[in-house]
Image (cartoon, rainbow, N blue to C red; front, side, top):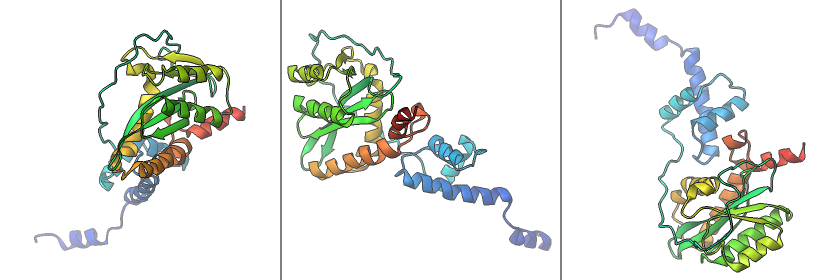
Length: 268
C-alpha cells in the first residue's frame, strides 16, 4: 500500500486525543438531554442545561456540530394553517394589552385562544387555553368536541380555580364569537376581570398564546395520529401539565419552567 511501517503502527496504536474523549462524553450528555425532552430541545436549550451541569465553556455552535454528528435535531414540523373564522366586528371592548406582553407578577394579564386538534375517529376537536403573560404558564385549559362558548367558559373557570380566583386580571383574547358571547363576558365580569380584545384579524395582538399553540403542535400534535378524542385528551394533558408547565424551560423567563418561575414570586 506504499505506507511506511512506522506510519501504519503509529496510526493503529494512537490513543484518542483529549478533545475526542471530551466530545464523546458531551455526545452522551447531549443525547440524554435530547431524549429526556422527547426530541423537543434544540442546541440553545441543550447548551443551557450543559452549563447548569458545569460545562460552562461549551458554545452553541459546538453543541450544534455534535448534534449533527449524532444526527439529531429539534422538532421543526411546519404548522398547519387553518382558515380564520369571521370575527365579530361589532364588539366595543378595547385592546388593553396593545402587544405589551410583560407583567410584574403572576395573574396580571391572561391570554386565551382556541386551536384545532385532529383525531382519526372524531375528526376535528378543539383546545382552549389560558396563558399567564408573566410566567408563561398555562393556568387553565379545556378540550372538547365542539368549539362553542362552553369550551372557553370551561377553560376560564379552570384557570380561575387553579390560580385561586385572582382579582383584577386583564383577560385578553381575539374577537371570536365564543369570547364575545354574553355568558363568557358575564362570567369574566363576575370574576372581577377586565376584558381585552385583539384588533380584527391581528394574530400579533395575542403572540405568546399563538406561540404556545405553535409549540404544542410542533412538539406534540404533529408527531402523532390520535385515534379518538379520549386518546388525544390523555396526550394533551401529559404535554401541558407533565411537560410544558413543569419541565419545559423558556428563554423568556430566564430558562426556568413556568411553575419554577411562578414559585420564585412566592419567595420574594
